[in-house]
Image 1 (tube, rainbow, N blue to C red):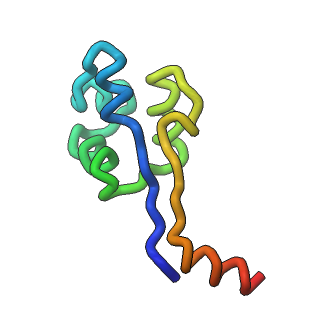
Image 2 (image 1 turned 90 degrees about the vertical axis):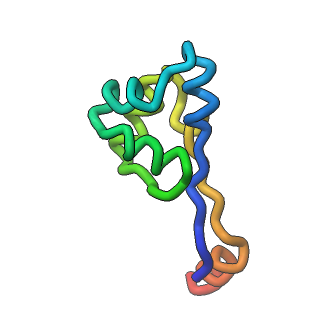
Image 3 (image 1 turned 180 degrees about the vertical axis):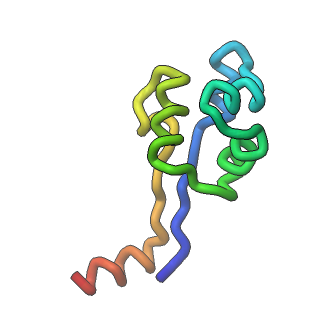
Length: 82
């Protein structure tokens, strides 16, 4: 199966919300700044609960913060198995 990517717009959302720092977002969502850094860099996919908390913090739907982009080859192979 191919690699899948969870993309996010957190950096842009932080900028458009009073230039919120990573530390401020971390405090508002109850995680460490390092967790926010890792999520922003797509090194870590957040839990569903944390994803919703981040979206709620910015006051936007989840889809405006995160998107999922499957690898086309992996997705095709997965669909063929069903």
